[in-house]
Length: 435
Image 1 (tube, rainbow, N blue to C red):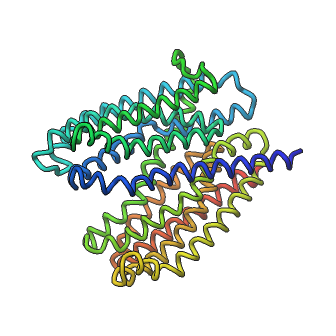
Image 2 (cartoon, rainbow, N blue to C red; image 1 turned 90 degrees about the horizontal axis):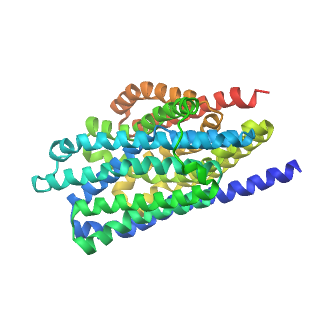
Image 3 (cartoon, rainbow, N blue to C red; image 1 turned 180 degrees about the vertical axis):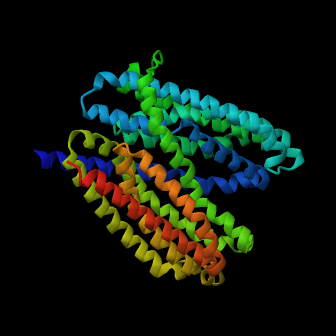
């Protein structure tokens, strides 16, 4: 019976992982089609500002303070331990916190919108006022985004990844499609395109509310606030936020230092292969998103099953990523030559080959990272990221100075390789070696 149960869980994981992969990739494919049209209709500068608004809404979603992930972990834990009667209070408290933090984030964006529009974004004078209005409109989307994150956390805790990714695809399609519709109706107005982005989030919020209500209508009765649940959620979410802030910096920081030290003219030889290879991580991320609530459940109900699932997942990801990265290494020159020409390939193929090794390490690291956070050790993962940032920055300057672009790739591989080893060490100590 135990083997049958494990088999069913593995089948569910495969299905959920596939949904996660489709939910991540499908909107990108639509973007390839729509983006050229948007640029042709509104011009490069307005489209550039629109992408900055996209990025700002995404960045300010950090104001959920990791509460979506915290809800997933703690709901899964309580379901595993049979504490179903405590779920309603937990969910209500978590959702109320996401609304409060989202309002704070929205107010902050509204406060800085005038400075962003008139000074910091270096916008043409004729577009500055429209940019400020657009940023004020965008600030309304921050509470919607954080609340959506909390509601998605509930659905993920119940492992309803089909619904999660249908809504993710709806948001992705609306993010690209509604600005096009806005152009057809109102013309190339930035403020109306940004307003359409808010409507996209409102539409998806309605979808999240509908499906969470199907799980338990009482979850959306925001009439209680429980201090103990708030402390647990904020503790988990606070350390999650540390990781959420530092992780993107570790990914994008190098390109700005490359531009500073070597000049903007050579940045593309590093960033183009990096951006393409980074998309390969959609594969392990699709699996670990599905694994997180399953790990959270099993760590409370069946530790041995959790260990078995961890080992199997790590081996699977290692095998798949090793094959993909090996193919990338041996085809990097020819691939870049066909895509971007011989000159670009000669200057970039060796960087792509080195980065592929790092993608292998980074893909494997997703498994112990998810396992540690599912166990509640978010402080460990956050402190690992802090330590990496402190060591990475001076080493990046050193390697760039003496080894150029290849040095940047080498130190990135060294960082993610060290990250993998440290995560494996803590996972072994906290999961595999405990009773």
